[in-house]
Image (cartoon, rainbow over the protein chains, first blue to last red):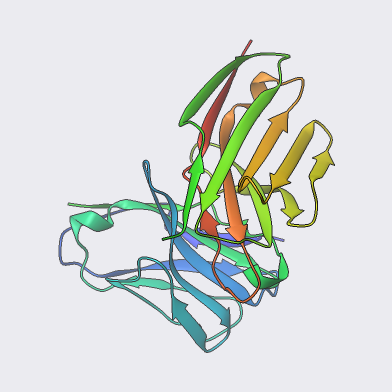
Length: 115
Length: 112
């Protein structure tokens, strides 16, 4: 099993550009989520999904869009990149939800720089 | 607002000693607490989960305690090794929520 796969590993954008961070999991997990990790801030939840067709906002959703058309994929779209979105992004999945004590499986991350 | 604090940003200890990391939380009543390990350039990896009705959990050289009165969890690594050097994160969750809340992490360095 590949687990949680994120692409690309690194990306540099100019302010105002848009792009999509890809996330795929092959474990048939219902719950998927996106986090950003900044120095001194820890992991902050951007968006999450509890199943295909169902998404919701996390702690820091502004400037990001998500969709969940299949169980496997959960892409994160940056609509108009800003320097404040420079961060490391992690996708994570779980067989259940935080309500059912399930652990998260993380991808290896995408390091994004916005100039 | 809900807040999680991990005792220090960095902790250096000598090989063979016990490392103790702290996770404190406020304005939250978690049903469980998780600990993750994160190596540089990688995503966090799950280590242990402890529920609110459990005082202590062990796995090999790892031990976690959970005190809901003090609103604190302690994470111990006994007989520490240089390979234990990493950042350790705590995370809280509870029924009725679809969100985990993570602490900022403690960077542990075990000196040979």
